[in-house]
Structures are given as C-alpha cells and as structure tokens.
Length: 630
Image (cartoon, rainbow, N blue to C red; front, side, top):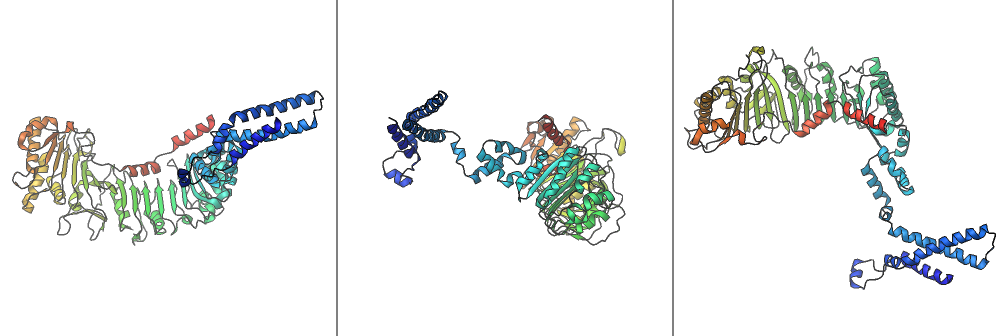
C-alpha cells in the first residue's frame, strides 16, 4: 500500500512542478489545450489532504511508540519515514500555489523595492521589513529607502537609517523646535553623513539657542554632494550673522566652507554667508531679513548665474546710506523673480531695480502693496528705463486706503506669468503715463517700463473712507482727477473691458470726452463690456443718470460703425437704461466669479509665498504630538 501511495504522490509532484509544453500563445491557439500544473494539483488535492493526515498520523504514532518503548519493524519504519519525506513537501508546494500571497512572493526584487518606495522612507519602511524574511532582506538591501530623513525619522534609529543608506545620497527635510534638545541631538547625528548629503533643509521654530548653535556647529565635514541648502528660522528672531562669533561658529564654518556643487540656497531670518555664494548657485531665496543695499548687492554680484531669485520681506531699508558701486548687477540668466515687501517704500523698489539688469524674466511676482507712507523723492526722469519682457493685459487703479493722495497699481499678464502690485503717490500718474511720440503705450515705473498696447481690461476702483483721518472725510468717495484719467485712457488703445466701481462717473465721462477732443477720433473703439457698480454718494436718480451718461458715451452713439458694448449694472439701474442698448445685464444675475476682480495672484505664486513666509509651528506641533502619542 505504501509504495503505491508513494508512486501516486511522486506523479502529482512531477506534474505540478513540470512546465507546460505550450508556452507560446500561437502554439496554444493551434494545439489542443494541455493539462497545466494547477490542473494536476487540483486533481490531486484530495490525495494531498490525505497525505498530510497520514504524515501527521505517522509522527503521532511514532511518538506514541517511542513513549511505550516499543521498537517497530525496521522495514516498516523506513517506509513510513520515506512516505513522510515525500508527502510533506508535496503538501507545502500545493499550499504555496493556492496561497493569495504567492503573487507578491514571486515579484522581482527590483519591482518590490519600487513598491516599498511608494509607501515612504525611513520610519515608514520599518513595518514592511517585519512582514517576512524576504521583505526584510529587500528593504535592508535598498539604500534609497533609507536615504530621505524627515521629521518622523529623528529618533534613536537614525544612525541605523544612515547605515542602511550605505553610499546613497541623503536628503534631509526637518522642522525642529529650538527647545527640543532631544531632536537637536538627533539632527547633530547627521554630521557623520555630511559627505552623502544632497539636500539639507532645516527649519527652526523658536529663538536661536545654544542647542541650535551646538547642533549646527558639528557640521564641519565637507559636503561635496550638497546641492540644496535651506536654513530657516520661523520667527523673526535675531539670528547672529556670520560676522559675529556665534554666527561664525554655527554658519561661517558650516561644512568646512566646501560646497562645490550647491545650486540652491534658501535662508530665512539669516544673512547668507560668503562660502555658500558662488557661480554654481542658480536659486537664491532670502526671506524676513533687514538688509541694506551694502549687504544685499555684494551677495547678488557673487551669484551671476541665478535663474531664480526671491526677495521676501528683505528690502524695507534697502536704499538707506548706500555707499557701494553704482554699476548695475547683471543677471542675464534670471527667469523667475519674486519680490514681496508689504509696507515697503517705493524708493527701495526703484533703488533695487536701478541696480539690477534682468533682460528677460519669464515669471515675475512683485508685491509692494499696503504702504502707509508715501515717498517724497518719487522721481521718474530716467532716459532709458528697463523694459519688461511681457506686455500687460490687465491694469487696475485702486484707491482703497488712507491718505487720499495715494493709490494702488495692479498689473497682470493674462498667462499668469507676471503680477505687479505697488502703492504709489497720486501725483505720479502724469509721470507714469507720460505722453510722447514713443510712449503712448508705455507705463513707466522708475527703472521699469511696460507695454500697455495689449491691455484689454482696466479696473477703476475706489471705496469710501470710514473715518476722518488722512484728509478724507467719513463716507467721502475717493476719486481720481479728470486730468489723471485722461493720461491713463490715452495709454489703453486696445481696451475691451472697462470696470468702474465705487467712484463718480462724471470724471470718467469728462476724461473720455477730453481724450476724444484731443485725438479727433473715437476713443475706446474696441470696448465690448462695461461694468458699473456701487458709485454711491448720490441719489438713485442721479446715479442712474450718471450710469446712462457713461453708457451712452462708451456706446459711441456718435460713431455708428462701432459696436455697442455689453452693459452690466445693478438691477435697480437696469430698467433706467431701458432698450437703449443691445445687451444689459444685472450684476445680481452674475456668478461670483463673473465680475472682474481687482487682483488675483495665481495659485502657483500663492503657494510659493505661503511656503516661504508662513510659520511651520502647527506642522511641528502635530509631528511632536504624534510621536508623544506613539
């Protein structure tokens, strides 16, 4: 009986492990279907189940016989043991094929390593290494899985992660509270891997403490692979610069001043030091600093190959007591330029642009709004200002603040590659929109000029003052003079959309009339849409008359060859216009996004500013609590 059983089991095993002769799809389609190993195993499943029962019974009987000191027949014992040797592997092979984990177990090592990388790195990979022996071997032999160090990896296991990374380049991105000595010590452990660092991004929440200084001071080994260095202090704290003893110890000797491949530098509340500024640098981000031109301009001269420059809250005292060279700083390769300085005087902006040569920026975001002071020395007497590479498609004059002698200028390019928002004194309008044979479509801003020949949308916006300060009475409407408006409209020959919000319309009509008398031809010949809202300050009848006067004028009743524009006004005034115009819509019927807005910063620019200006205190708190809870 036993030999026959062995023969059947051997046949089942051979049929299970033998490959099918029909591997080619073409051969399989032209030949009768042959039995597969799985078919054989399914046919023998009942036999193998019986085999397992026999094998278990053999082991049980053998143990019982030994315990009774009974010596069995040697031949029978050998046959039973031989049956056990054959049956158990057959059963295990069958179970493995039917197991749902078999597909994962047969995945090649390289593919499984890539799957692990989707889960995460460092701490995230640790649970995967505990699934089975094979997974652990793959995880431990994949250096890239351990080469990215984040907040969750600043644990006692960090030295093990560094060892498992072997020779792979290491990327570090952590946020640490300056009072957390334990995590600062873990950060200092990374100094042993300085030669492998490719990216080193550290954000410190809190003041500059001895713990922070000691942790950074340990990084004295050269970093030949480092390409991205970011050291940021989330609070506007006083961080000692490289010129001080603390600064030299913590930053001046960082990585032994040997950074041959570094291309990106980002610092916040920290002055850049000489060792990190070189011709290899292509990206420079400076945030939350009080830099004079004597400090900033030498830094920019040291990095002539920049393609990305961001100065965020940096130029508030720029032009004070400058004693450096008047020679311009050439940044011929610069393509992206961010400048953010709310409350900064325009003179600092002019001083910066007068010392920079940026031939062709393809992306620019210049935000200088919310200024409470005006420049007394605002002058625009330059002969050849630098011209922006992109034409302006949207122009906004916003009188929305105190005092009344200032306004906000917003300029946008329609493909969201250029945004300019700046606070200027109202008397500067004639200089900005100066008339001349070659300047009828040029907007001049100090050392910058922009093309307005393609500006299709103009928004004139004002709001009433809620208090009596700044020279404007409570409830009084801020406005712009007829003369200044005439200068503006003269430079907008391609205007298609005109939006007037919160300002008297008489000045607009008078300015357009004066311009028509000046040029002896139709004004705004391409106008297609007129939006009027909230002019206020007068009775309903006078308001309706004012809207009608403007609508009549821009409709060019005296020019029958021009199309009448679409008029959008409050529902209360819609009936007053009656059938005089082809298309009249009520503002109340429009969607929230259908009415033109004064300024919309593109989402990509918003995300960059948010990431580089906002504090990471909340993110750090969540990470810390997560580890405390675990």
